[in-house]
Image (cartoon, rainbow, N blue to C red; front, side):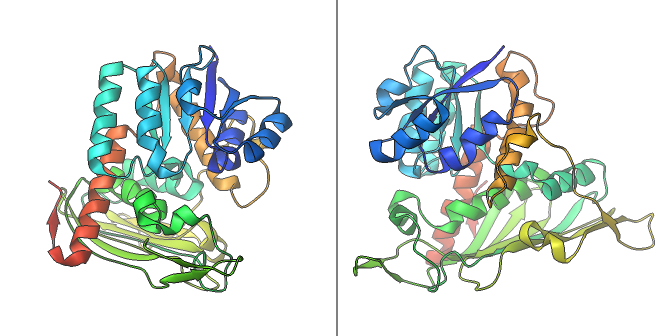
Length: 362
């Protein structure tokens, strides 16, 4: 069986979604949809795909089985609801929606439609994170005590070029609590326990952004966040990110538990050190290699900055395919409920930062 895919959005949709489907057996992208013909046409023509500028008509097409939603965040909810109503499976980018209430509507719509759905937390499948998942599953950590994941990058440093305007607009779903920490919240909670209380500081360090046309953009979205989470397993989790760190890119990770520890660099910093792990049966921490799993057609993945997310999404798709075909996925697929749980943490973090202190997400 081949799952026929329609991709909505040609930003991240063509940077990551399209090549990920091309690297995976069992999927065929048949059409693309975007609002701007000048951006849509060159991509569709390059790949020989049909195209549309009307997403409402697009999701009803008879030749599409799966709608892949890679639009700006504000459109995640309406496109997903319409796709489910049309009887399609839906893969939606993170954050799942602008609000937890919208996420809940998407969860309900998926249950009513009886279609398979997933939130694109593809970073679970990055080589180092996949290895951490295997180690946790194998009991290296045991009952968790403390987890820490810290990200840094220079994306919004004043010396860097401006990104898409919507990314600086909180009301449009912009900011890096949505754009980066959503992945980390999902990763930590999927491994170490459900969040029950959140305390956070979420801030905008660089409040204005000069644009090439001489105007100034007033930034309402966040570039720096630090979250404390109490998990239902009794563990404390610390998750932070800042994208105003000049000359930085990558993440560091620690997990301490009753049975042992996992520590080390992730992502861009991996070249500067190894992921280490050790249990109570070992004398010390030892290096562990990243997961070397590759998708079926790894050779087609372009070598560029997004190669890691492309490969990770392709592996997510490989694991999801059996479920789409009526069977069982070999690994847990991030659900809409997972996306809603992350959005509840994000909303609690914003409330906490505004003065609410510890906020319950029980």
